[in-house]
Length: 495
Ligand code: BGC
Image 1 (tube, rainbow, N blue to C red):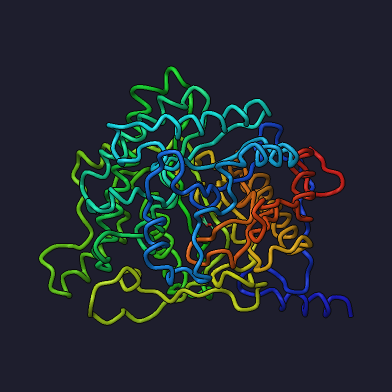
Image 2 (cartoon, rainbow, N blue to C red):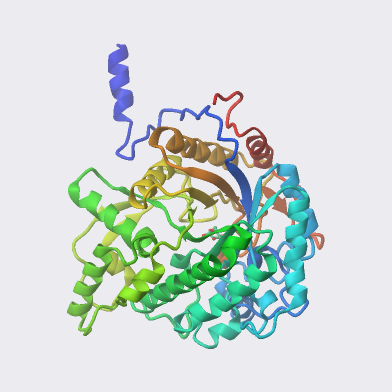
């Protein structure tokens, strides 16, 4: 009887490699002593103080004020978590969590209100110096993102990321940041999620799909590389830090074992991760992007590929500009092969040419349609980075779960942290992936872009109806605290 039951159990193992009937085995291996656990936020999403102390408007200030309808609950982040004023309270919470690092972003508009480096706003600079000092006084390492979706509106008015001068503007801004904060910052991130910035982010003058995405991407890569070279040439020897681009997306799981689906998933991996990952490790766009976009561009009547060709000089400039691999990842996408999409108006999706969807029988976030609970995908993703990008040190810069209520009893988030970290530990132990740290998105419930305050990612609740923006620790924060302090996911761990 037993072997038969075992056979039935095996049949419940789906093509995705997990069993719906089985409870996952949590890793009982201690995370290495120097593995860094942290939490993260971004400036626009938490700071508030949108027009205080000389700050100018970012594209998000501008858009939420001008067209509130673009935000689900018609809100904006004028106050958000009020963290600009409450930063000491935030650091006290980080301290209570026992994290080793805090990843946050700088508001370009606070530091350079004109967008350019001609006028440095000392009040803005001092704010971040104070935050960094407070962190260091509490033995928390600051990890700093230069640009997290909140481009100065004045630069957007000049074409934003489509202007070929964008890399130069970014380099000038980066210099001010390295000079001001570099003695205390050992982990820098240039740009958060260029993929998002060049697809659903704000692109000046109305996005021309399938064209502007690729121009934006090239400028992001050149901007990142400019900041990397600047750091490498002028600051690294003295300041001794590292600098990386933050890439994001999902693991792409083939819908079946068929060769077509496997190829479709590999194609989507290259079009999303490889779009930025391939240039910074190999210098150029992935071959599959070059081939497919050139093929479709020709059929659409373009004289040349919509994907801008990188010159040998640009290739050499971009290649090798990632000191470690920084990754934001939350979920898994299932990918299926389809017939070649018809030739009509250009689009990134048609260039990729696959069917991508989310797993229907996984636990779904009640507030974010793209977010499903698929912990095993992260292990596969990490292994893919190892194989694809020369076994880099990997820092997970974002990972987390959203509900819609911000409830204190957040069991799903606690399980998410547990099971994702367990898969990360397995990737280290069993696949030899060099993961050096994990960062929970997010420290606080905050302004979730177009979803406003309807999606809550915090391990700490924020009461947005109170003028105090009262913070209260959720259940998951106590579990995460134990992990941060013990480096162990279960009751007892072994080395
Ligand atoms: C972004 C965050 C965002 C989070 C959840 C990441 O893509 O960097 O700003 O809040 O995902 O959607």
